[in-house]
Length: 399
Image 1 (cartoon, rainbow, N blue to C red):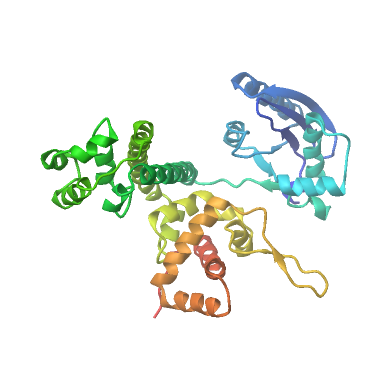
Image 2: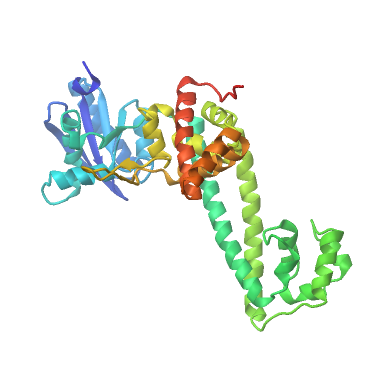
């Protein structure tokens, strides 16, 4: 007898920002309880007390379905897992398609909560309902932590990029020649030079002895600054934009230090992740991309086959053929963070492995653009990664 055909208590949660609607039913289809809870400790206690009452009355195992796993449902979703209940995530995209095919009554939170119970009933018998409920697999704790840390890192990197773009644009407008003394405006010595005074215009009058006291500014950079000082120019905007430039430089320095600290933490956690160790054995897969992939994949048990993994990583499209017309379309279930990590890692990988480089060049010769060729190579690597993680073995280069 399958798990889905065993008697069980089924809980459907329509997740909201400040409160949730809950419907509890049995595997036979009858609804036995409905209520609303607030998203706070008291609401969580009430939620579990109502479920516990049903457990004592019927003696069946519990399955919980909710929208927004790892989103607005936090920390309720984690609390459900800690009680060893089966947890299902309601796939919003597939749910929308299901509602288009089988329209119901006007939308309310209570109706949506009941819809989850219907999906439990129909998922094994109705193709349109299949896949709407996706069981959340247990993931190693270190991979959950890697996901949080790498997402935090990516947000900081994105912020640093935005601030740096504004910094360079403003600096170019206020003092056109100043950027020419560095090949990279995010260099630590340059940022410390910019923030070494309380007025940007004073930089043109700093003595060499003062320059050499600035951390990371040595003789080479002091000479470059000295050459600029002889022809230094500031536009009229410097009186008010100069302060903004120095604030941006200070923020970029802060972000550099935070990102570096996160890199150390990520490396420490990745060292305890079996998935990270396996993926990192692929040539070209660096520590940051590896940690992101391990965190976003979580556990390979989430995926039935390598095609599902490839879709999740954005390395494959869905078949969109109809009749004699052949075509494909982009999947809406792509993890964009994992895709970005995979694209960067695959690009480095093909430079390390001659066979992969030849495949990349073959695709380019066929007229594929760079990103298309990288995705084609990534599709092949998804098969390798899937098999490596399933068999728990690292990458081997065979002669």
